[in-house]
Picture 1 (tube, rainbow, N blue to C red):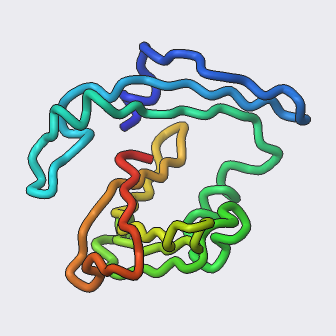
Picture 2 (cartoon, rainbow, N blue to C red):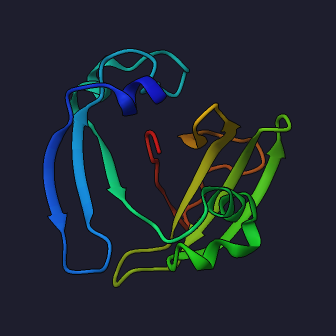
Picture 3 (cartoon, one colour):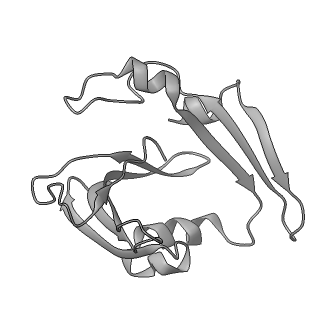
Length: 154
């Protein structure tokens, strides 16, 4: 993940300098390999070729440790994601990894979306990293009440 983010090949998309802290958006084609997996867990080369990874940079007036703690605490999700109506941990895999289930509200004619993600938290020498990947879990099968969404890599 860090190699993908820190590596070359990012294309500038846009910048918003209207606020106090500029926000810059970049995109990069996801290289084929293990970044995108099929339902069977195998590398999905076709999916990797058609999806881009998005990187957003900005200066935030907050300590990195405080932001890291914010992402660790499900009860605070509304502080950074106004669309998340429900967030639940369905399995703790290790001290640093869990499977979470989240639901958004309905948007216009669209039914609520749900996401099942594996979330990994780690502290590197100069970085605090939170990585999300799509997952499946026996306790959260696809239901017609929701539209299952997948965030390929976050």
